[in-house]
Length: 414
Image (cartoon, rainbow, N blue to C red; front, side, top):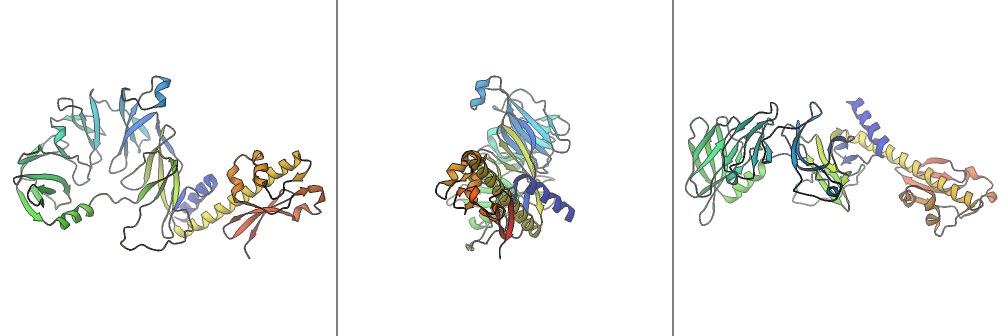
């Protein structure tokens, strides 16, 4: 484990000065280098519950002008990226398929067209075979995305029955109390299925419907509105990460804690968030919280999210920030020396020094963290350049000091 932590530290500190690291003082994570899945006009991204498959739709780009914007008339194809084999599969689906929803068993997907007369059925992600169905897609109330309930549910409004259809094509018709609408399923004991329900009444009646799989026998139980809402919030995916927009960029951070009382902001020793990509990244996190897929500059990318010991992360981040401070100070010192070389060995004065030096440095943001302490003037008048400070960049526990001769030294805080 220690060896793995150190390896992660080398990866993030060497590549981006710790900007791929995020978390809080208790838990920390690092975004690993991006893995390219595909490029082009990608949309409709989905991930299987076990994280093995990334499903996406991609439109071809036959003309250069189509790159400038979304064109729904362009032909679109479904693609399946298998993380086990690291290959993109191009499933052979019938013409007219516009929807592909992965089921909770991580093996099947329900595919369907625009009209109920179009091809539809359960597509096996591993074998590529399709089990045909004939369901009314406008009647869908649940699309099978929970791991404990890999089936689809349809109910036509006003009907006193609903239909449960399994990936093998078998279906069960279940009787309902009058004016009852079935909603998403809940975890239930073996041999039964349990559903949230709403019944048209005054006021609206909330309930649960338990279905015995063996024979379809049902048991209906009325519940309070509060109990109904609580049960809705108690299930579902345990998401650990979330995305955040900041100007033109998107970031990844830990999911905010749910608490009634606001807490004082804790001092962070590592970044709260890590940069992911541009603001239109359309990121999707895997259900097992092990990676994120997103769009960036026309490519569909995947980055694993690895846990790292929080105490070790603080040390690695401090070391990375120290390295960055030293490099920023060095770049600024070199830029100033180039400026002086063009100005007959005269350094700029305090006023407007940064705008004068800016043309000599590649990244002007480096100058923002540099504190210029030299008063300017002819370098020939400096008796000891190696001990005369140009300025410094603050870092964790000290500062990176640049000297008139161009060398940089780290000086710890007293």
